[in-house]
Image (cartoon, rainbow, N blue to C red; front, side, top):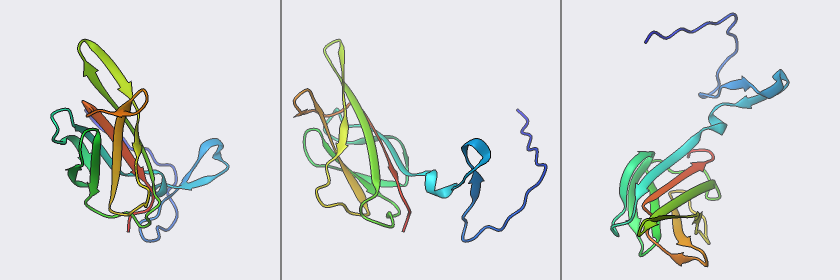
Amino acid sequence: MASELKVNTLTGVSTAGSIAVTGEGNSTTTNLQQGLAKVFSSLAHESGTPTAKDTFNVSSYVDAGTGVVTVMYTNNMGVSNHCVGALSNYRESSAQIKNVSLNANTTFVSDRHPLLAGEGTWTLKDGENISSTAHGDLA
């Protein structure tokens, strides 16, 4: 499949890799790097051992017990209080039960994010599919 790039005008100066992009409505600009996920992880934890399915900027996982996994970063975030979002699910018999994972940090750190996966009243369960992303600035 052929690729095609059409450019009428390309101007500007990039500072330290910073790229400003015209945002919605052509009235604002946004920094491209600021909007990108700096970490993403898709893993299975159903066997008790976290197993990577697809990752970006993830060095390893730490199994901290049933329903608890820590995602370790290859490159640290610039600040401890970065933004993490996550989802998970698992199967029980023939029913697929969905639950939400959350960033379980009580003290945020820049090199990882722990996740808890649970159901209903937060009974911890190992997730068959756990996905998370981290946004913010890299160190």
